[in-house]
Image 1: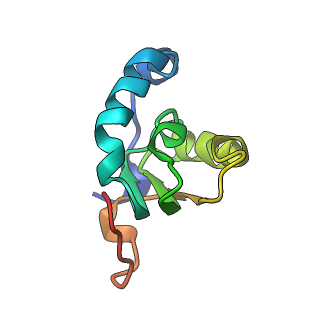
Image 2: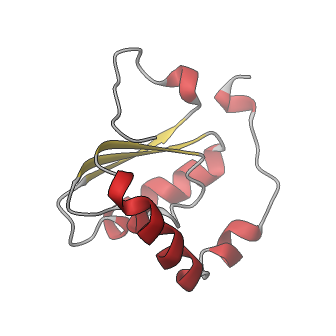
Length: 107
């Protein structure tokens, strides 16, 4: 499937963005394993990005196949990583759109 053909129909991403207690919980479980170069697949509007960041993350690629959501993600990328040292790279596409030499420590 070409990434340009993908359109997400759900609207729950904006609602789930408010699930801060849940996000704090699951990120505390994942944090010991999240480090280095991180790839978030299906990043949506970026609601999980701040919860995936920790001092051991150097870069986070937020990959989103839906063009409309990818635009929203790109527009908010500065605020998503505010105050952190990690570089946030919002990208529109699917896994096959990534350069073959891209390597990640955490996906």
